[in-house]
Image (tube, rainbow, N blue to C red):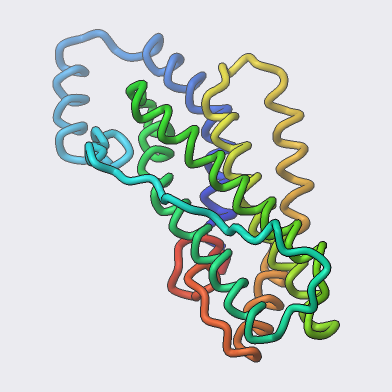
Length: 228
C-alpha cells in the first residue's frame, strides 16, 4: 500500500516533525563533543530526505489533459472507451511523475523557487482538469454496457480521490504546526481513504485485466496508486 503509506506518513510527519525538530534544537547538548558526534553521525547516516533535491531547469509540464468534454449524449463504443480509460489514467500518471520531485523537495523542508512553485501550481491545475474532464465525459455519454458504467465511475472516483489525498497532504505539509485546520484536513483524508483502498484498487485492476486495458497508473510496478 505504497501510496497510502506514503501519504499517511506525510500526514503524521507534517504535524509532528516541525515540533520535534524545534524541540531537538532546544534540548541538544551544546558541548563540543556532542556536536562532533552529531556531525559525524550526520555525515555517516545522512538520509536522502536530508539531502538537497535538485530540479532539472527544463522540467517540462505535460502539455495536455483528457479533453473530450464537447462529446455529449453519444453511444461510446467499447473500443473507444478502452482507449479513453488508458488515455485518462496515463495522463494522470505523467502529471504525477512530474509533480513528485517538487513534492519531495517540499516534504524535505526545502523551498521552491517562484518558477518551481508556479510549475507545481500549474501541475495541480492540470491534474484537476484531467479528473474533471473524464468524470464529465463518462457522465454525459452512454457506455457500451453496464460493466463500463460501473467501472469507469470507479476508476474516475479512485484516481481523483487519490489525487485529492495527495493535494491535501501537500497543503498540510505547508501549514504551520499550530494551525488547527490541519485536523479538519486529516478528517477529510480519512474519509477519502474509504474510497482509495486495497479492495477497490484490486477490483479495478481485475476489470482492466479482464478487458485487456493496460494502463501505467494501475500497473502493479507503478508507484502511483500502487497500494499493495
